[in-house]
Length: 424
Image (cartoon, rainbow, N blue to C red):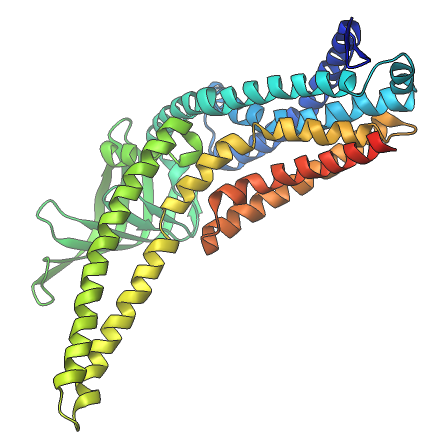
């Protein structure tokens, strides 16, 4: 036991509170883990299980998606677990006993913050290291399943894009497709459209998707030509989407599946490309403005507006395009995901700080009330996070504030409540 500033810091109390918080954290973690896991199972059931994919492959997909579930469940479990622990200590008057024994609030806040830091670091590791590795294996396995089970990619009334092929399907029953439209390019570079009243999927192993088209109409048009075209009718036509095209459609990695280092690298690449495009558009904008000025200065009095109008329209269009490039580029999505990779894991720390402040106010039934409050705050946090992401994507609002506002709100609320509690 150490004495600091007339108050004691007890190692025994520190370890006791840490042990209690970790126990309730594990209980709450299992609760949130099961919720997110069941949600993942339902998604799998809709997309994969219904297509009769072997169970052991589905199990592997579930295994590779576990890091994402862990990264999401940990912060919410930290909030509910800390609330339940501090609420129980307060309702059982253990907090009052600690304070009466000469201990300060630091003996309660310190252990909670230590656990919060530990959970944040573990959650960040799961989100930044395990998640990209797991999603990489997930993508490779899904590609294998997709190639081995072509029906996985064809659904009723859907549009499916592969590397060089676009398919629009009508109703799908088993391996039969009604009203199929295929748009692609031939090896000679001709644009081609194929329409079939009925088509049947065939299992071609590792070659790709094989489709037998009945009563097919084909039209092919040469590039940059509207008059040079051919068309044919076929009672039966075999069409194959190559394996390499399927592979290209299945290996796209989204920013939330990358590590923070990879996302940062992509942000720099996007910034470089965007700067080049903006500089080019700025030069064109200046040229358009100079043309407008010259037309106004040297145009004849009667023909001024007829001369200036198209130039002015070009100038305003370029200004609008420049504004759109700055505010609505894909760069915003990468920045949002970059800050999100830090805000969600370290949300556990802000949650713990808020949970301590709320838990100290518990009078009775601390664990039950703490769990309910924890669920409510978790839902509110998630709503604010989704709202911030939508705001940042649609309006170009600061990605930093969009992702960190819920954490800042939790820290500020916790600080105010804790100050009022200590002063009481």
